[in-house]
Image 1: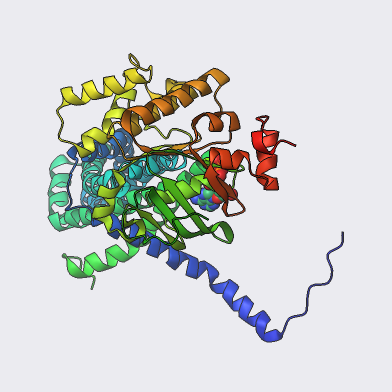
Image 2: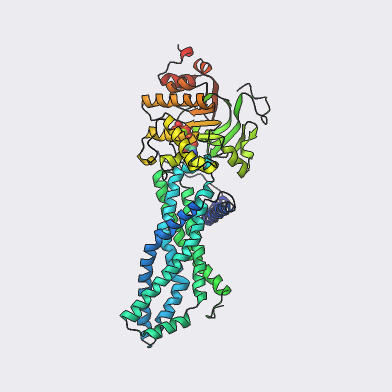
Length: 280
Length: 265
Ligand SMILES: Nc1ncnc2c1ncn2[C@@H]1O[C@H](COP(=O)(O)OP(=O)(O)OP(=O)(O)O)[C@@H](O)[C@H]1O
Ligand SMILES: [Mg+2]
């Protein structure tokens, strides 16, 4: 059967539709953002209410923290090593290779440790949360919780959000420490940079403010990863395929959100915690 | 649709335990329930029949506010369900036991932990007491000895029974079964029917059963309501339903192979 000619429409209507189409992604994005904020607020509202169920929090901390630990440490060591390698080669042109530790350390503490460790957590725990809650949603286990007068927000979502905010900074700190070990190993042991000089310049350049900045970012990233994972799981539909899609989305959305929000967080933190860098 | 329509809803009614008025629910553009009215009789087995996809599961999920309607109200003993705030709603939900269509057991917990879950959440009973209660319930359903198994390794029929045990531990006033016999062999179906009747005898609850299986329906039902085209097409006692000459209902019963006694041509 041939489709007939499209019905004639007025120019104004066409323009209105066109403009509407153009803005649709923006409107949808804002809509989604709002949904996440609502999920966050409704979950946090359960925080002061009994029962507190410490076991759920411990389990979530273990899942996020211990679960992501090996991969965070592995990636941390090699990130530190490669950054150290690049820095030594770059600074060697000016005989300044002993600065490798300090500069690498700053980059690691403020940016690389929080961002990379959060990406690891997103890939592992964020995906896991989306799958687990998604499966519980489509097999009606979440409805079952509710039918037994247990709030799924309090029972499932809140512990994961809190665990994310607690564990992400710890993982980031461990990432940073291991990365510095990797950097030291590469610079001092492999590239024969002087030990005393390396440590001295690292101490000079790297401040506790840098590390604190990184950890503050991590708290936000931990929340982002777990919130997006919970959201995708909670709103899963359409069987196993739907759960899979939700998991993919959780990883993609949280990775993108981490990288974008990192820019804005950096901007804010540099203004507020203005260290010795002079960026205003 | 019933003789209860003019009685005030905000007061507990001696005969009607749960009363649905004007319930309308849509998902997106799809209207699933439209101004639906239903009365559930106290202390009886109320069966809801209807085609697959008619909205039976959606309807019963409104009973304890697992879904919120677009319009309409449900009254349980004078309580307006959808007007309840979070805390009272949580207390209210303990009146219900819901056996889900696909069991909805927590797959990270063992059979025993599944059944113990409502007790752990809502009572101050000791571990030993809970263990005893759970063993008692499981034994009554022929499941003793399966405490340590995970739901993943049970058969469909066993999962249904564990789901029932879980729904029973808090001794609910209203017990809801979503298709307890679908997908079971004839003997298991008979077992589940006996189990429902046994529960009725032992705990004096009001029950709502969703079912397609007319043989089983006529075995257990006190009242039958048919959900068709977004509304209750007809509701009444078993004899009224058997004797009904509404074409769709008649066809539904006739094709199921169970003789609709009164209306047989
Ligand atoms: N969460 C939902 N989102 C969108 N549509 C839904 C949702 N839940 C149910 N529906 C739709 O509502 C309709 C009724 O579904 P319901 O599960 O209540 O049917 P049912 O009568 O229980 O059928 P069955 O006997 O097969 O279990 C279906 O068409 C289904 O697609
Ligand atoms: Mg159903």
